[in-house]
Image (cartoon, rainbow, N blue to C red; front, side, top):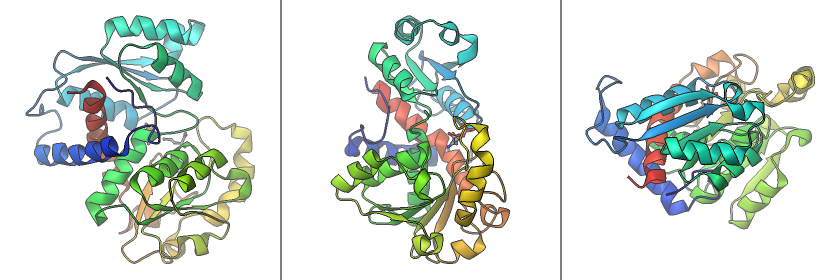
Length: 308
Ligand code: CP
Ligand code: NVA
């Protein structure tokens, strides 16, 4: 049994296996209605709890559909409706849920909740986003890049805007998959120094660049995310917008990247804030493939967790 808590804590060979497995599972389903069961049913007789303490569209639907395609069943739970949201301890919740279900996916606020759940659960726990990281998203992103433009190893990935949870998992992936990572944003929103140091210690070229145009020069992939995350106070909104406006991904900025550069965004996007609609709907954008690949990548993650 394996937990999938973060990219930097998962063995690189296992990560590579999951990406390749996801691609083969995707290929095997091509052209079939979404509800068609997979030829293999590795999650037959398995029950999976999906716990959400924050809103979600992609994570909720892709995990639910993925489990069902593999023959399992799901329980989608809102943290607020559980005793967890009313004072029951995380450790007790973990031990109780482990008696009912075979795997737990959780989207929560503090990373410590995820860690404690994993410590006390006797079934695999998957990180469906915390304030600090979003590893499932980046598995889908690596898969999407490679589907379009081949191996990500040695490529230049540029993150624009806030050095947030999704950015952190991208930095972790740089270390594990071996690609260069440039952060383009203001100093107050830099990624955590611990994560930068970790990637550098793994031999990765991590660049911090305040000038977005310079940052994007020669990029193979340009990535944006919302300027204000779910865990951020809404009162920072105006300040963030003023700070981050120079990092908006627009046609001019994409023009600095390589000709075949891709654009990604984990979604939901705020059109014409962090990225213009012209880029989102333009030829470089692979945002909907990225969203689709959440499904395939997470199916591979779940199989790895259960060893099935
Ligand atoms: N990208 C992502 O995790 O989307 P949701 O918030 O809709 O799950
Ligand atoms: N950084 C965003 C990602 C949403 C999928 C957030 O945490 O709100």
